[in-house]
Amino acid sequence: MQSKGILYLIPVLLGDTEVNQVLPLEIEKTLVGLQSLIVENSKAARKYIKSISPTTKQSDLKLFELNKHTDQKEIKSFLDPLLNGENMGLMSDAGCPGVADPGAVVVKYAHELGIEVRPLVGPSSILLSLMGSGMNGQSFVFHGYLPIDKNEKKQKLKAIERVSFEQKQSQIFIETPYRNNQMLADMIQILHPNTKLCIACDLTLPTQFLQTQRISYWKKNTPDLHKKPCVFIIYKE
Image (cartoon, rainbow, N blue to C red):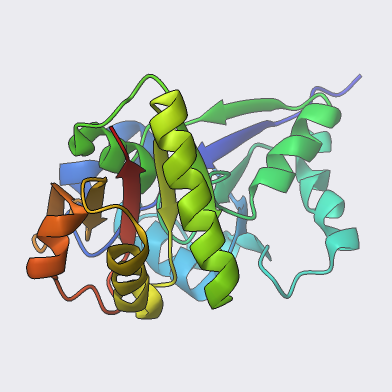
């Protein structure tokens, strides 16, 4: 009986930084041995692979795109090379695949099919933000994106602020970069002045901004977060 391949979860840089400052050598060694990968965007993936592993022959790469345009019925077939004994890679556009990322479904299918999954070490904006926040790292929850609707967003912010206070739990979420300033304005208006808010922006980049202050501080010292990748963490004491 033919043995199955291994699915490697390959982290990607969070922005334009030197590879050797953020990623371990193991990622380059792994990429050299892979020809089939599941990615969000083929063009971006090829550029990233070239920067990590210049010796990889681009014409030999077989990339399967997994994003909002992908037919859900096709996803399982992306794992066929694994079932035929070939190792594969799974990559996000940025950060760690499978976390706040469509690749999670690929990992789910891999487990269902008895395929070995090996996550590799790399940058996660969510964990880096929590590490640098000074907030509770024992109990925390990641909400992904909050509702866009103004009333629903207000209710959600109030709800997670209440949960944070009652359970002493850090509440982590993200926003589409062009909506960051509006999200910050909403939090300043809706949350209690003494509630702590960590803003973690451009992590691992030279322009990194990471600061935890109370809402009352942010009201008087409001940074411009427009079109910058950010993670927000709320904690009410």
